[in-house]
Length: 99
Image (cartoon, rainbow, N blue to C red):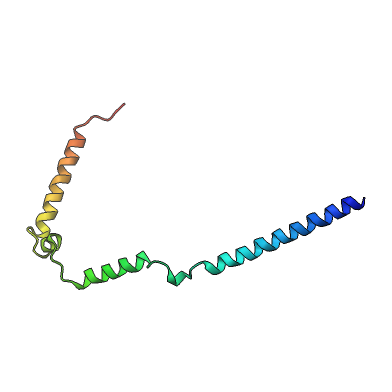
């Protein structure tokens, strides 16, 4: 019986030492981790800067130039859309409904 108690004591001691070593190594690992501010720059910040720079520059893109001087007036555009819609309606009316 004394042998079992002694063996149990040694095992409990070793388990305690292992738990202590694990706790201390976890603390050391947390200390070695870099702080959040020391990491790489946030990609969102870079995109925000790029967006503000593009908004500040005058736009020379072809899409902006097309919007500045439209080739057709609003009434002409509406007439084209109306004609296209009428053609679609007429083509649909010519179809027979499925039975």
